[in-house]
Image (cartoon, rainbow, N blue to C red):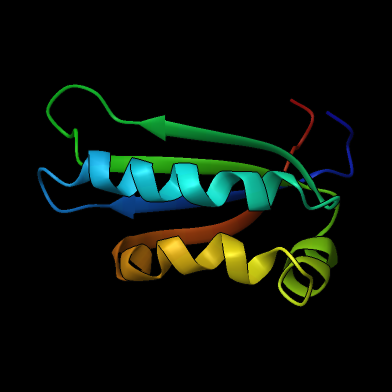
Length: 102
């Protein structure tokens, strides 16, 4: 990972019993996200243990502008976001981070 990579964390708090449905929707969206040249990496993590209704998505972007401008105004965004629209109300965090080098 380069020091200029921007990490976006999206945390979902999903209804109990609907995680698989959400993951199916994300699987439909993922090829469109991965096809964008500004997207450098994607990880989808599911919680285990008592809080199995939580999902964390970690996306590496080349820059904030690459995400918020180029991707959202580009050809891949609508195909990416359409399957996820019903799930946007379950987002509890959507934040950009940078590595601090510790």
